[in-house]
Image 1 (cartoon, rainbow over the protein chains, first blue to last red):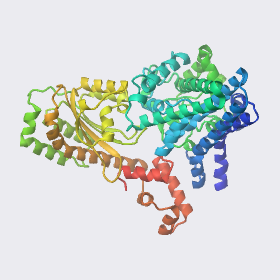
Image 2 (image 1 turned 120 degrees about the vertical axis):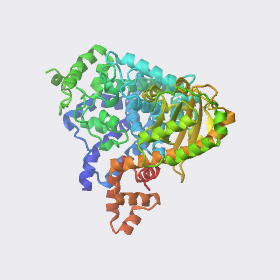
Image 3 (image 1 turned 180 degrees about the horizontal axis):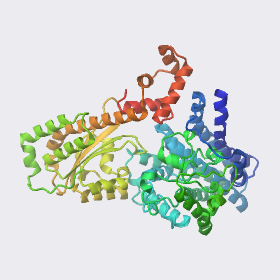
Image 4 (image 1 turned 90 degrees about the horizontal axis):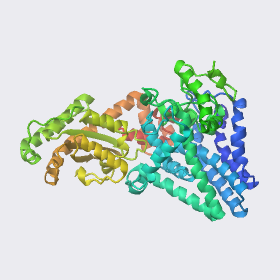
Length: 359
Length: 260
């Protein structure tokens, strides 16, 4: 039983692949390795691993369950080692514009995925794990994630508070609106980072994240000089935008501007790609997460009848950046789900299932 | 919940607190709040207390001190429903400086003495002021035995200086018993909800109690004539029932809800 349970759990080790690739890239002086592999090869993994059937009913062997619980902790160590390798590379190699851009690409991809692990830790009930989660959001360059995410859960379906995008929003409009709001509430002149009370766990978490960001930035500055600091600063900026991009993809068309019962249903687009669930610690099974936010990542499975994405995250990220392409891709999927709310078509092993929604 | 009361008979709070009958009536009311009452009856009792104090609005909040996810927050309300809706739909509890005060202090205070500094805190206070909390008193309640569930009663008046320094002590002394009873009622209700939702057995509760006493799987196994692997299996199922990822967290949760 241990072996069977171990075999099922092995997939979640995929979460470690991005920081490992980053470290290998730094070691071999191939800065684009992590970014290129995750963006170009990982979307094809669906062909091999197919659809995710979940593990909600699976009873993990206690030892395997404990290991899966500790995977985010292991991830933090692996990421720290990977970033140390990058710092060593920046310290020993001179940075050109081309290599700088390649580092930004790889760091962005790895740190975006790090926010998934931070997200898992932030939902834990244990105070130390949440502390680690906030620190990880800071290292990932988006220290306000802890506050932003709690707000997101409590203002579900709310388009006026910029938690769910409006149907008419482009990612640029939504992302800009949301970033302005969150920045003003957290690090604005009357933001909680400066004026909040430290007895509040939210304020403590925010300050912890900000400290981790500053320390990481300083480490990049020390290792790579001004250019190193600039690489991290730019990466952090793109991570902040990337988080908005993902939120947009997960909730577009499902807010209270379009669906009257959106606030009570916590609707989100889900992707049933098995590999993606492993890689993102089940962030892709997003509606299920919203319904039961405290449930560990390895116990999540897609909600029957949830709206399903017509492609994986990487492809949809590109589509979202070009609003006409996004609408052309997503409108049929939204209309299909509204017409067949009980059906959840699966792309199986196909990378795209856009055509299924056009029938 | 009830609508904002239109005061037909204006009586100062000083006059109310000088009347010995006021303390007896509040104490009687507190005694009536038992775990047998349902939410509506407790809300009615709160409204009655508010009336006895000549206040216009009352809200009792209960929450776990370190709850960053704001999932433990529960309210008993006797105030304007519009305020309740606004407060809930804007997740004002995330920024409420009066609840924040309860996290760090245990003595009653006037709401005007609690600073609102961030933009959101200022908005939350402004909203409360519009709906019957122009002046208010906050009476916190702590949990015993190192548990971290807190309670706070907020009594408000539409009159700006209705609650003041002169009457603070008298009102807080009168209300403390009621606050403790409301806190106990809320904790008992949450405990019953958790038991119903998770269907914990007596064996589960015993396991949680043993963890709380710091016993390892091996020790529990030898006490219960099972294997430590069997105990680990039971923990796995129990953690899944409670939606937590570790046995220490499960035991803490059970203690917070008064299960062990």
